[in-house]
Length: 404
Image 1 (spheres, rainbow, N blue to C red):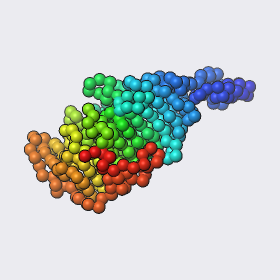
Image 2 (image 1 turned 180 degrees about the vertical axis):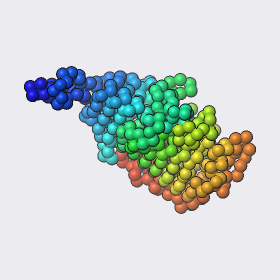
Image 3 (image 1 turned 135 degrees about the vertical axis):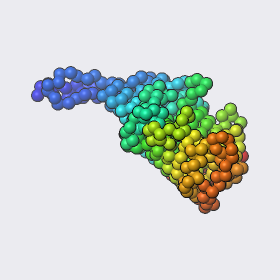
Image 4 (image 1 turned 90 degrees about the vertical axis):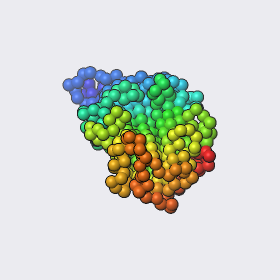
């Protein structure tokens, strides 16, 4: 009894003195080992949250991301509503390893905000989450992440990495070598037990949200003004994305990276016919709006290729040179075999639908797409839907704001 009392007193004293504390305090009188607390310095938000620890940030403080912050497998990071994280310039990012958990608990009235100290695209990394759901890059369903170079994937399609909701990610996409850039939110083998809801990626230098395999679902995704693709997937992603509003921004029309595709869809770069993991990418995309402009060589609302399949319903595409561009044999075979692209509305698109097989021969795919001039997309046609207003810091957006 005396030992238990002393342990409780030890815990309470640490909790009273630290910004964020993790203490092991059970009532097992046979265990005489005390686990020291782990504190987080708001002015040096980097390092490792070690296995067995749970760290909760303080929403009254601003955290300065000064390097890589790893949430190790078996650890948990909790970010309360209203917390602000400001990242120094460079390869500074948050990465959540397999078997770790992150809880970004923003709300509509108090979102969590990540932003670069320079307030410019590509000034810091982004958020990276690794799970145990399948990648199709190996028979084991695993691979190594290009961001963080850690193992991800496996066989647990329902894996749970926590929840991310009501978060704003600004100025992400740091380029750390000529061929690799961070995204706003990168999801490597993340499972369906993970919640991704109300995420805004704004003024980033690479992709907004990218799915590398896995089975995670996402809803209410806002992507504005990123340098590459708004939504990207590969490696056999088989989740659902419901309610997406994504647009280029005219202020970047003459920038080196004015923005590329609304969707870039692949199965795998080296083997589009793989049967590993989930096999082909085959997500369901519903209630989505993609706005572009004609700048650059990749002015395509939806590029579906490299074996990717998919199901699309209630889609608005506006202001791109090309609406839907299908490529490669496996992809074409899927879309020619069924009614998988329905209720699509084309607005000010140069060429609505293109297709070519793996050999490069043009193929007519117009019969694979059902057009509906009354499609509402993300909820309000080409204009910003109500669900994206307020919490995101954006009150209005139209096709004119995207360019042209």
